[in-house]
Image: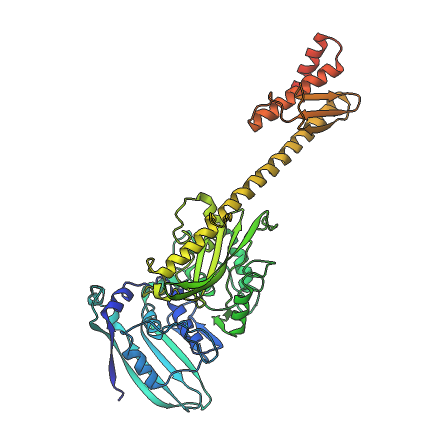
Amino acid sequence: MPETIPIKVAVSVLADISLGIYRTPANALKELVSNAFDADATRVVINTGFPYFRTMICRDNGHGMSPGEFRDIMEKIGGSIKRKEGQHTDKGRPIIGKIGIGILAVAQICRRFTIISSQRGSGTKFEARVDFTGFATPEAREISLGSEEAKEIGSYELFDDLPEESDAHYTKIILEDIEPGFRERLLEASGPETKISEYEFEKGDPKALSDFVDWLTKKSVRQISDYNRLLWELGVICPVPYLEDGPIKGHDVIPDIKRILLDYDFTVKIDGLELRKPILFPTSPEIRNKGEDYEIYDVEFDDMVEDRRLVFNGYIYYQRKAIWPPELRGLLVRIRNVVIGMYDKSLLNYPRQQGPRMAMLSGEIYVKQGLEEALNVDRNSFRETDPHYIKLQEVVYRRLGGDKETKTAGIFSDISKYSRERNVARRMKEEMQARKEVLANIEALLGISFEIESCEDESPVPVEVDMDNGTIVIYEGHPMFPRAKAARRLFERVLIAYELANGVADSKDAVREEFYRLLMEG
């Protein structure tokens, strides 16, 4: 019989984890994907057990674990969750996961699971049957923070030296006894009745994900089923490549990062659907012209901060209409290609109110070095007093609000400028259309064709009509014109009617009669 080994976790870690910090299935599963990435896997296959979700399976073709390594992980699960900055795998990938935290993340999804793993050349595998029943006890929830005391939260049975093919290398995790809350969220029949009609995936179609992204551009991710939300969120948070045209159609933004993601040769499939980052701007067919409808801004930094190096780059994207789905609004921070939380709509707590303009921005920051000491235990939020986090805020704030020292305009200043330019262009278009209507009415009433010209020169009269040459000149700067746009347009029509009446009538009474006729009929 195998030995039953207790699992103990430091109270300081358990108290946070037991609060349910992995609030969605995607956030819990991302830890398993991160561990597979660190194991130099090229392929992760997740089977959710759709549509009943009674059992989930996650398998990767990474280098696997030995029984001794697994024992060591379980013994240290309650110790330090930090790792040395700058570590890389044998393939040169930056190490992004923390296996102990990944195992605790699984406990957010189920209470019992099995891990099977083999390493190339060993000719054996091991199987560990893990029971985290103690994880959900009332005592675990009542533990206070700060203590380093270890708490027993479960146990596992280890079966080692099981026969396996000599060249096999993998880790397979079978999640059983799925936590009822998670399962109910994923069931197609669950959720409020307000959920919109679902997108039906063609799982084998490589265009399925991009079609899904297009479908979402008029919806919120919160409106769709939690199963489809799982697919969307995993695409955002996993270190997989972008959609072919992403993140911004027609523009090669962050080319170094896109190339690195492709070079990782890392794919994640869930229920037969290969994931990509579902980020594709613009998010409206009306957004067409760069510099007029949208703009892209680079963000980068590389320097020492408090004797520690901080290196990051990325982009901030702006479009003149609100971004859909709204879950893409804000700023997404990735450390070593792993998402920390989700999109931050506050733009790292930007201090100046910007109203609806905040909904027009989206961006990603890739932190290549540093900021890790600012990570909280949940790996989904930051300690905002950390010098690296403060520097990140400072750089982003300068990009948004401008830099007085270098006299560089900020993104919000550009948005204001673009808005003014669009308003001027729209007013000119409206005025041209209004004047076309005036000219058409004149021709219908008088049988004479005219052209309207605008002039900035000074003139004793605001409107001048040349009956012989068929021209009407509007002196735009004349003080008689009111400032209000609607009043100005009405006043302009009245003056044109008056001057035309004077041009076609030959007596005072005839001028009055013609003037009234022109006003009433046209």
